[in-house]
Image (tube, rainbow, N blue to C red; front, side, top):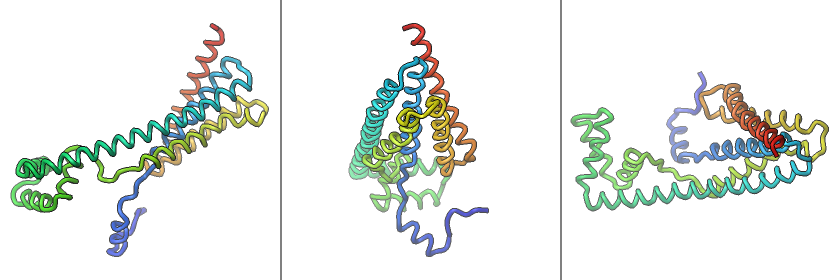
Length: 239
């Protein structure tokens, strides 16, 4: 059986001293999938409408830059809002502990009573947690408000979203940029590989197998592209 880390006293001390690691995987996966989906959807729609290669490139590159920046900016704002909300609730809990310590202590007692603790064990837990204001506040933020004590960087979240969007979103455009024969077919195949690759990669942090995660992401991406292609064909016949 594979063990993810050592459990010797020295290894535990070192690992806990380094603190929890902040993971920006979701920002990369989110940006990568959306970049490949939206850019390939633009390409598929343009091809479905039988537009020229020049138009495909103009629409694709414009989408790549504008939508990539928009996603990064939205992720920055969203992550920043999470931090601001955390600080607001932290300040509120600190104020309540100062003004209404008995009520806040009762909240801790009720939280752990709901977890199945009773009697002297419950009172010991309450006493330990409320003996230090920092631990008390962090416990309230986690248990009452469902907030993680580790805050992600808005700049890093935005950067990884934008980087993944540009890198993965550029793939469907490469056959057109390089004027390769059968560019639409090549773009489809290359983008399918990107979808499957992203899904397989994120399976490292999942309980899903690499092929299942890859197939799931591939299905989502290609479905979006197919819809765009069909809409393009429909609009071309109407307009």
